[in-house]
Length: 167
Image 1 (cartoon, rainbow, N blue to C red):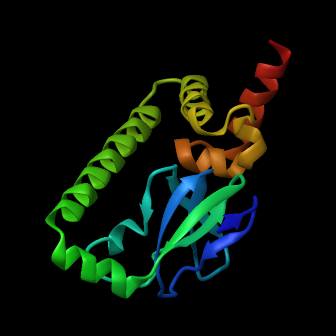
Image 2: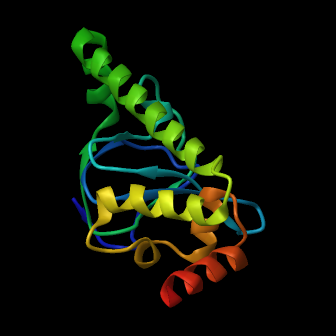
């Protein structure tokens, strides 16, 4: 299946299949009762989602939206869980995937703990370039979303980006 930028793969609260991201990048957003959205995760090629349903089914914890054009495989629930019961190697692969996701989250924590806002932004942009080049961070995320990922206000992101253009 092909998803284009801005298209939704699944919605928060729904149930359904798992998905394997072959190419592209997705964001996982939580929608609050007031309609506001907050990015809680970034999905990169090679990941199978939702992570919290890899071993047992659960409703989707957030909504998945394409940041760029994505190629996604649909993994039907019944077949996925039946295969887990019959294949220990598949369980091992899931454990490795979750380990890799934890390492990615550690990189995100490292971005958040940088002392200066400019360094936080620089590290996030460098990390994103691994997956979206030649596009830039500001082509796939809004200033609000960038701020959510690194713990800064949109106004601070705006000021930093303006400063980069002048330099």
